[in-house]
Image (tube, rainbow, N blue to C red; front, side, top):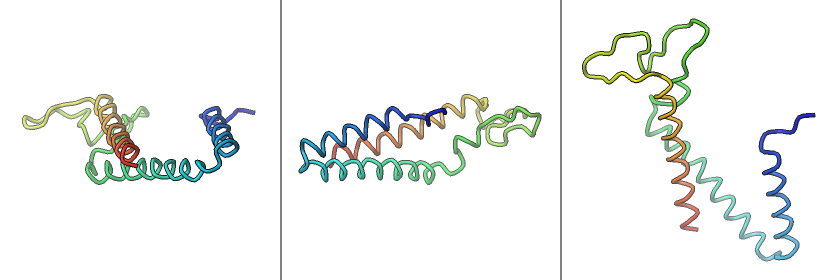
Amino acid sequence: MKLPRLFWWLFATVVLLAFIGLFYPTQLPVSLYKLSLVTMAGVIGYWLDRSLFPYARPDSFIEPDDGAEPCKECGVGEPADGDRAYMPCSIAFAAAMLRRALIVGCAMIAIGLGA
């Protein structure tokens, strides 16, 4: 049987949460509160990225490998027009993923530092 992705991280989290509950039971609600804040910040950061960049979602830059139509977002397969810079889909995909990770990470850090 294959374990799910990040199983050992989940296991370590549960062990540490049990440790907190066993030795510092008064800190358990605080830990759960902070965990819920950081989780909520991740969701808010994701939706902030989606609302700020509705036409630049990372999945729209995935290149088709089965001979389907070229990517409509970055124009692979079309000549670049003068007022738009040509960027291959793989670079646009990487940039969109990094942008989303930065926005989500910054939202989580902001909430984590403020709580």
